[in-house]
Length: 434
Image 1 (cartoon, rainbow, N blue to C red):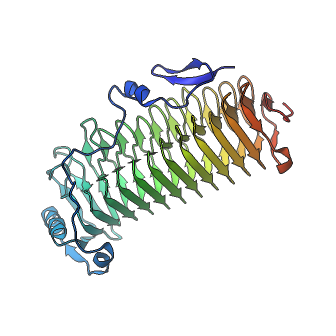
Image 2 (cartoon, rainbow, N blue to C red):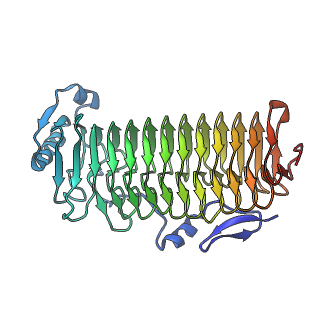
Image 3 (cartoon, helix red, strand yellow):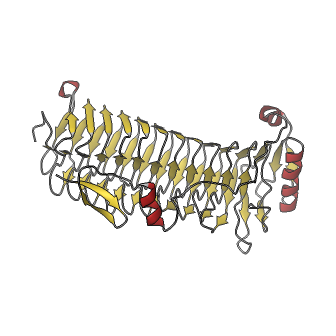
């Protein structure tokens, strides 16, 4: 049997040494420019400011800021000069930004600053008729907390200009609490947020953002922590919802309804490590490869107590979960269901190392082989107490399709079951009824 490899023309048959995702060079050809890279112009924000600690700032009394954009700009400028501040923005106010300060609508944050909104939505937005710029930049040493705020309308159309909503420089920190980062458009990566430092998204909504390159929602090369949040309806070339090339941890959250024109509709872990727990990745779409989650080249990833469901790869492989070359993924106590691909691997496509523990794989469909799971010749797949049921493949391997040379260990003694798949349960899988 042959594997599938992504080329600049799409997914085509090739020898078994295949890749789920294109190389950096392949991606650059697809995009017509260098592969997406989160960066900042040299020389800006490279001096770390000194001031009061974040804890000292948060304990201080908030400073009221009237519903006036100039006063907000002045308050942030003064807070930077004085080593930080807590600023209480006017409740129900829309701060309308009309001109850029360097590359953003507000002064770059260089110290610990907290912006408090209120129960009645407080919004910071770029005026529709204004020149294009992002809303906020957090420089090295800056530590910005957003509470009950909406950040919207940022736009950076130049290719390679990242983070239309918020840009977090290396050494900077963003914390979003009960806030919305929505309807921002980046010419580069990270329509909502581009993170090179540390970003915490808590009880927040990152939605309806767009990027020309990677990550409509959040693009991260640093440390990204998402908890009790929604990453929804974002769009990009690769990684419609989230891309990470650093460390990403997602808990009690949902990634849904995002779209990638090429690869990784929901979550694209490009390098580094990934952890997903008590979360759902659902109804995401890739125009080409992997509708749900990609663990790309060399990634170490754990998925626990989560749902990967109803994701679609429209023209390529992998509806739900893709495990790329040299990656290692462990999925525990999870559900992979109702994912769909026009080619191989409706639920799962494995090129490297994958372990499924106490996991259910059911209701997935492929347009060719491996309705539930497709395992390549170079791959190792182990199932413990896992049920692979009611999956459908148009050609062969309704439950599990294993290329000759691939290793599949069902560990039947642990309660693994492969039944009720169509047109058959297994191909090239020892100890399976077939």
